[in-house]
Length: 295
DNA sequence: TTCCAGGGATATA
DNA sequence: TATATCCATGGA
Image 1: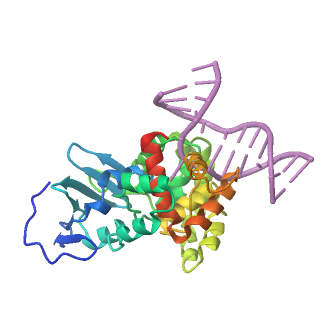
Image 2 (image 1 turned 180 degrees about the vertical axis):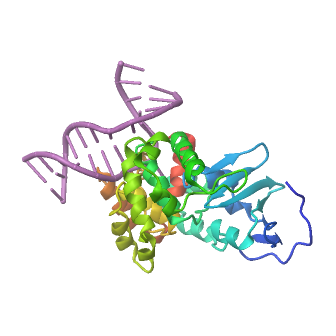
Image 3 (image 1 turned 60 degrees about the vertical axis):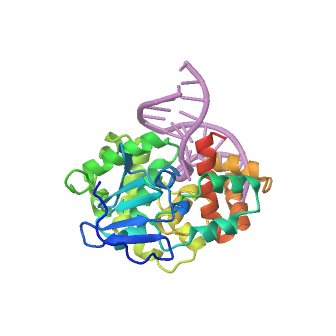
């Protein structure tokens, strides 16, 4: 990692400072690490394309790579494009405010926020989220990561040292047999069908649509049910009035004692009613807390 | 060997 | 609308 060069400009209210803004050498320093932890952001289940190196994390999204390096109570983002990093890492949002608004209601959530207060919800590419979370269904995380890596190697643009995430057109051009060959199993047919719909301009119809309509629209895609739709909405469109319910969230629901629903559909509904626009944030704090501590 | 993983599609009543 | 069954794969 390079050393910090230049003079620190005035500190922004959001807790980061631009060190170097030139492409491809853009760098940021995060001063407020109470609301920024590289490990927590990456391990809370929202992203599959990242690697932990000896002294830093390497993150891939679309056709970009960025590095996160933590030291001296700061995090350096080496990203190549400062504007993009500000958006991607959601740096203009005040997570202190979010955490304070979520606090004091459930002891369990308070503990989760103390444990994973450095989580942020990344702004990722919708197509990448749709494909990734179709692959995630009834699957485990190490396997999901492997499949997505092989998907990028096979169809993504060669960026010199790594491959980007494939475009919808590239995804649509691949055969079902290809998806099977990289380990997708029965999800292979879902991916061939859905990628064709994506290549046909599906995403353009998501603008200015309310969350419930957007959810219904996503669920017209083969391989996208309620839980996968909620993950796509949260991580690909930053719709935070959703609460993805998987096997972990079912435990979370029961532990919080919110209600007596027995199926994921009603659990998600009640959790969103309870947390409103902050449901997605609450879900991430709780999900990370439960998984890391095997609760 | 069996169970499980950030579930969804399909058939059936 | 609600419930049951099937689905590829690999690690535990």
